[in-house]
Length: 235
Image (tube, rainbow, N blue to C red; front, side, top):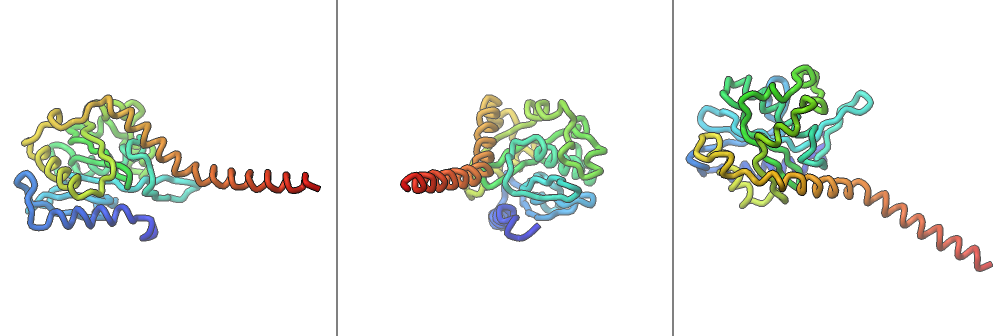
């Protein structure tokens, strides 16, 4: 992936890395890593608890898709999407196994438009297709009925424009509190009624991102053709 294609990942990492310097969040000292190795895979961004360097948050900032036998990673995606949510939970599940944790780290999907946070999962393989994950097929990481079960049980919040420092400080404090049990998920979880509304907004925004250039070009071409036809009609 070209450097210019991971602008958001780098910016998010830099901001988080700056925020954790010489600070505590819910009593914890934190560290931040990028392209962090978890069982032969690389998580985009992770937050670790010092001094034992245990992962408490995994953030996926790119959607990886296979097309014609080649993998492509994109930073522009719907953070509510089934595929990328499954991707994030996959890394979190692998981290649970790697470190022998009682539950997964919290996990999030994030684009420059929004961040969606999920809480820890005690039995992640009840949601995941292990064979698909072993093959790196994250588009099929979630079992067919797992998406809605995951949302109902583990969705925490959605936030627009996630690069804001005040939000990221709040995020780190909340994640640290949730990890230690100082904060309960039900105390910070946004209403599920917001899920569908925000999902639709995110989908429409993503659709506009891809469709508008083509629509604009079509309108310009049509305008040119109509002008040309009118000019011919003047003879």
